[in-house]
Length: 431
Image 1 (spheres, rainbow, N blue to C red):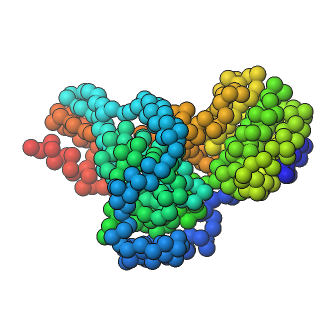
Image 2 (spheres, one colour):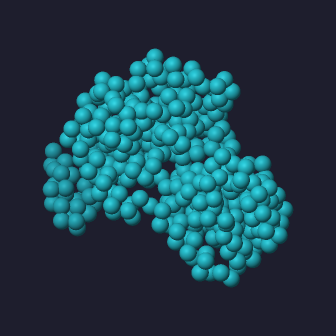
Image 3 (tube, rainbow, N blue to C red):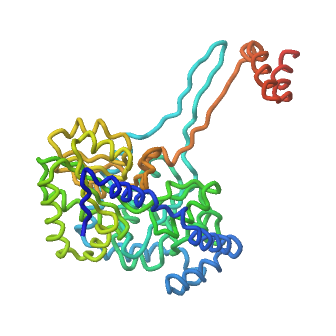
């Protein structure tokens, strides 16, 4: 079920790395063309296109007046959530809020020579749209992770778009929305929802940034509207790499690989270890435990396609491999946890030790679980308060400093062939 890649199997390892790197919607030209057509229709026809696509893709009949979910309907769905789920949501919100409070940024100014004052002004985005997927990917935890940092940043208007059956089929999602105090929810999903949030329709407002997970159509739509609006990322399938030595418990490692694999059949779950014994024990655990799980068919496909147990000579080699893959999540189960973690440069999140499974980060540890995937951890970071603010530079020059630096500025402008730029500062010498 899961591939064992030995130290000497460089071809097998290279093939696995290629597979991980190729899971990108931008590489699917047919998908991008299909989504482009949907976006164009929503831009041209607004609510009518949303109603048509909702009937076609979701098999759900809506009138334009029903696109926005009524507050009483939202509360009714939320009321069906189990009390233990409500308790978990409240704890998660509190922990995530506490973590993100530490990310707050403040405006600042510095004084320069001759009365110069420079600075940076921090302001929140005005409107943010959060996409909440439906079906088996309707996760209330993702609502929390996307909404809380936006609220802390000071975003005044946060709207949610989700397929029309989501709130009815998953009351926990409705409960999360209500617990967060969001009351503007639109019953529209897929690429058409992204298009509506980007360009606006008669009912759905245009926003400044779109965040939130979704299927490949949502990911493709976010890529296509980027530039008209901001986006969080082009999210790919989820990933975890476990680095472990002979001190790790095979049952813990296997449980965490299974947890990752149940996300989707193209999820990536890899163990990198120095121990032949652990590798064999984990493989046996996976075989034994998968049959017990409700999503076993998805897990089997995932472990077959994107799973691997990689044997390496030493843990430094494991770290080098992780930095090459740049995964979403890294778990470290070793007698040298801190030393190994210090060598990891490219990862969305790092989980320390036997009792920090990735699942605690998914729900209520506090740090955001919206993380870079598909090797983008090489250059991007977790979702946070910084994603919902703008930094505006401020410049205040005195007459004395402008006159003093005008010849230097003019020289640079003329070196670039911009005479009007040069004159715009030199004119101030003639007053």
